[in-house]
Image: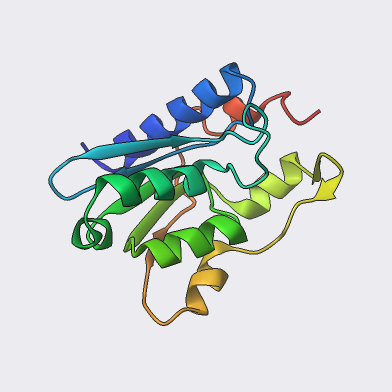
Length: 154
C-alpha cells in the first residue's frame, strides 16, 4: 500500500465518524511492518472537546505500539492536524505525517465550531518549535477528502 491508499483509509474513517454523528475527521498510524492503528473524531459522541481523530489515535497507538515503532511510523490523516493534535503527535514520537486537506482549506469550510473560531496554525509551524524533526507531506489530493465535509458545517 502507498501513501494515497493510507490517506483514503483515513478519509473512510472520517466518513464513519460523520456517519455516527461526529465531526468528519479520521486518521491512522502505519508502522514499517504494516501494522495499522485507527482513530476517529469523538468530540460529539463522547462530549470531549479534545476527542480529535489524531489525539484519539495517538492515545491508541501509544498503548498498542512500542516507542521505537511509533518513531518509525507514519500518521495519515484526512485533514491537517490542528495545533493541539500536532502537539500530541510531537510528544508521541511519530516521525512522519501525511495529510489530505490543509488547515487553510478547512478554515474556508469551517469558520467556527460551536461558536469557537477555528485556529489558523499549520502543523509545520507547531512542529518547527520542537526539538526534533517531523517529516510533513501535504496537502495531498485524495478522493473524498473534501466531500466528507460537504454540508456538515452549514
